Image (cartoon, rainbow, N blue to C red; front, side):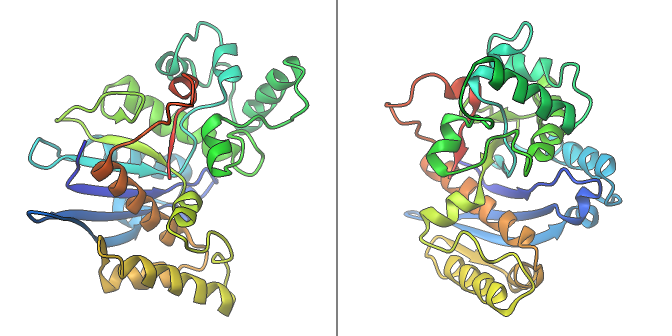
Length: 287
């Protein structure tokens, strides 16, 4: 499942999503005994995709960008995107006619027209199950400390990410989603990234870096330099400057998503044997 061109995407479902979506791009340099990810650029999505910051425009552009990346046995391409790729199993199986993850994508969003109606439906499903939790999390969310996909902090990301990017790509066989689908040499593959989990795995601060304060800037600097000094990752000066000066932390998150995707490409994705088959419905975060 190796890849030679890696993209990390920090996602947004806001009305002006392009203000917060960054795309990091890197190439894998291979020697006889080592692979190194060289992150060359980290670019605001509207500039990269030649769109406005409007959500419809930038998500359409992002979807087309992913679908049209040249890929082959000689130059496989992988993306890591920072939004939930599915819902808890109880929600997936509650949808009419859904029997697996792919049929869930065929169904989504059902009768739901926006993030609000999506979150309301998800809440009703949880209530009908008589759980004590308002926000049910997936197994993979629990493992890395992520929020429920329909939590009010991220329900817009989930709704628009699945509806406008992931589902259309899967329906038209323009990507392969790992680990739920097998890779193909002529199609880009994509994983669900979660930068906070990656930073935690690397022993780096996973919060406190998204602000205009000096302390937040210092944390971004610490994270950037720690990533750049690893034997397996290098960053250009431009990529480092972009990540440092973006006080919202979106550019840095895109770079971290690229690092997680590189590790998945190099090392493979291992779902622990202790985890049952729910991940095949719920998806799997690559930390």
